[in-house]
Image (cartoon, rainbow, N blue to C red; front, side):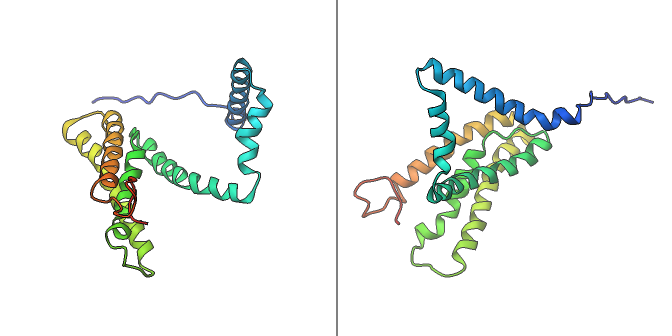
Length: 183
């Protein structure tokens, strides 16, 4: 009979668990101040530009929320992957493919309007992102490839596919040559 022994990890103190994010933030601020000073920029002015000015007006908070919401959603999804010890580095590509799939209805059927458009777009976006995430998963389970490399390389494929779409089949005919879809 084979005996399995579990290795105990050293326990972190509760105080360190609480203080570690603050310590990391303080060290980041110190390193940033040093770098800005070496570049000849007043560190207080730089921190004001990066941390205070982006949230000084209501419209800026709105813009910050628009940019942060997808990143937060991606981070929450990736936390599940990391808990399962799966290293998904290609979330940006999955986000792009989700956006492409979610854009199918308004781009290809601009006359389709109504209360079902947004729920259908969300559903298609989830399907697109899940489909694109399944490619590295399939490659890992079938061929034992490294999911870090495949998911990362598929980000570039998604970016190029999106670029091809907006410069080719999805290009706005009234877009004056700009690579964009119909409004």
